Amino acid sequence: MSADGRKGGGRDADVVVVGAGAAGLWAAAACARAGRDVLLLEKTPRAGTKVLASGGTRCNLTTTLGPDEAARLFGTKGERFLRGAFRGLPPVAVRGHFEALGVATVDAPLDKVFPASQRAVDVRDALLRDAREAGARVRYDAPVADVRREGDAWCVELAGDANRVDGGGEVVRAPRALLCPGGMSYPRTGTTGDGYAWLERLGCELIDPVPALAPLSSDAPWVHDLSGIAVQDAVCTLFDASGAKLGARERPVLFTHRGLSGPGAMDLSVHVARAHAAAVKRGAVPPAMRLSIDLVPTVDREALRARLIEAGRVPGRPRLARALGGELPRRLIDAACAQAGVPSNPPAADIGKADRHALVEALKGLDVPIDGTLGFDFAEVTAGGLALHEVSPATMELRAHAGLHVFGELLDLDGPIGGLNFQSAFATAELAARAAAR
View (cartoon, rainbow, N blue to C red):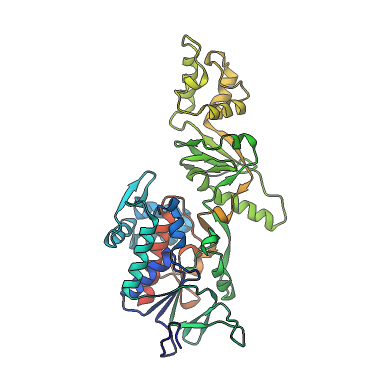
């Protein structure tokens, strides 16, 4: 008996898709449109839960960048793997597809693209409607326990059934299996890393998963005191304990009661997470790190120094905050003064040469001590997963397992905030679907 009550042929579908998230819904629709009988399995009671939570419930569904520029943001290894996928389904084509599904899109700052309605539910509903109208069958509350090969079929075993004597669950069979159950980020949405165990049992190499695009934590009280302050124009640079630069991003940053959030900090969180995971693995103390924030990136050091000198000559003895043109909140200026070792918001005329140098350095690099990330519960994506060399970048098919395709967040791919990870999910899903449909 098939998964939906139909009999026949030793198979339950031509293609079984595991995971009804963004990637799974896209792939199911594409396969079904190509005339394949598609069964989509979802462990939770609804599809696209993570889509609904993304972008502050607005869903940053892709980017305004071109395909090659977008791929480069995934790093050297990721760019090489994704270049073909992004050219095959570029961001502009993703937008066009949603427009055809009735979801108008709009540009937003920082290369982002949102639905014009600003409602993530419209994105999810369009993907689900597309899959159903194409003919895909969707089955909810169907958690998968294992994926294995038996003869000429891929067998997807559902979680154990207490009514079965052997304790095993129902098995769904198909010549092609598409795996996109997600990683471990936002586990409350159902993404709890289930797919890693399936792949490990198949002998695949996995890169240890760590949280990415997560807020950073800091135990410094002065950082917590700045909670609520956002710096829209900031350059954030992450350094390890030895002073080595790990990465930099020119993006907004937000001070919180636990540390730092906003894309400037979150885009760099993967480096922190990997360093901490490596330390824990070898039984060492997690390393101390610091995020240096250039608070005035549009003004170079010489120009900033000249501005302070000029302000010192102005009658009325203007203070530092005024000399900076009111561009920064007073609390943030006080933090820079504390780092420089000078009195809070001093008159510009009282700032000597040594103090002026220290202030310039603090304003161009406010050092925030970082002791970790807020983990998977607050991470937007997962870094790590199936090693890319295991997968054909043209078809998302495992090189050692014909008929099994893996894509989306289960792969060792992670890009920065800005619709890049949805773009990766859709583009890899499209390639997997095309190959499976053939």
